[in-house]
Image (cartoon, rainbow, N blue to C red; front, side):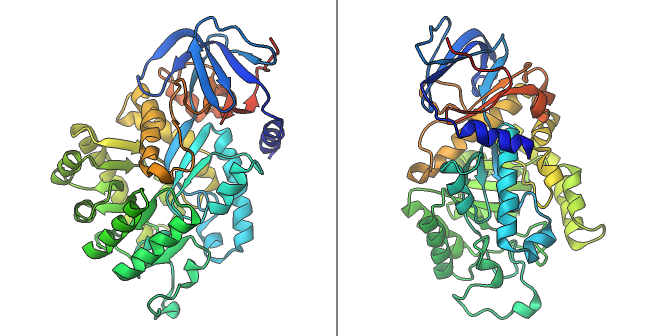
Length: 437
């Protein structure tokens, strides 16, 4: 909380003039290499110039990097702002105002871990996003999907038997807060998609197959019909954005692709033929290196715990397929129901080195994830480049005490490693002390 208060205090100051990062080595988010010494000038919320020997203008704040690495802010492509920190029990029975307060505090902690953008793929984070964008509290950019759209009994349906039956078109108890939405026909799917777009969704999230945390759906279940999926992709496409789907199995993934879905979340149980199809169609894979601790949110021997163990066992093969077919691969965490695990966001990123080099890992969490965010087209809430250190890009920057392309564990120790955290040109952490020229 002290860190959150300090960040809020720094962020509340006017963003006057410009900021010059002097004597920094640049990891640009695309090349995988670290440059020689250079300077980076930030004016307003954009990177204006990158060149050695830049001379600061009057009123320019100067941060002497001392040869440290300047890199883009990290991006989590599969985050749940409203559900990462509270327990499952609190989400199912807690007061929504209480849950929003938890999410707000976690949002600030997320930014202070160096994550300047998150792609929120399920949950009513629109109010939180507005508060962050208006400067009410520090937090990352939120590319919100809104409610996870599911079918009756699918992943995202947390109702009990006593809540049935549902009248077609009527919201269920969990729909009312806007975190999930049940849709059981093409017409209902269109309506639910349009509701999220009306609220400001950057992209749309459907659950096309069974899930781990859902109490009713087995992993092998294919939930939406092809007609329902096509209704979603058509409605989203009419607004210039795309549909991403939760899907683990090859069957669920293939059906989604044929319906026009552009991004697959998870894909942990897909097969070789499905990965090859994804490569041929240019489909994105947003996959997560699930830590074993994530399964501990579920009781041993429970339906959900068994499903988690099956998914985790298939993850290694899915990463091998992603590398074999050079799939467009994004990284995210999918942390749910655990403030402790949310705090290990950087460590989960570092665990990608089971399959990728540190440099490849960092490119995935910056430039590649930034490219994925651009799929929202005109629904992009932050039009402009993120995830890169380039002239004209948003000034979302981390100054790192060390070289993370050599020592990836630095991203798991943000308190010590990240000396400066900047988002949208505003400094939220500065342990070096910006100086007047």
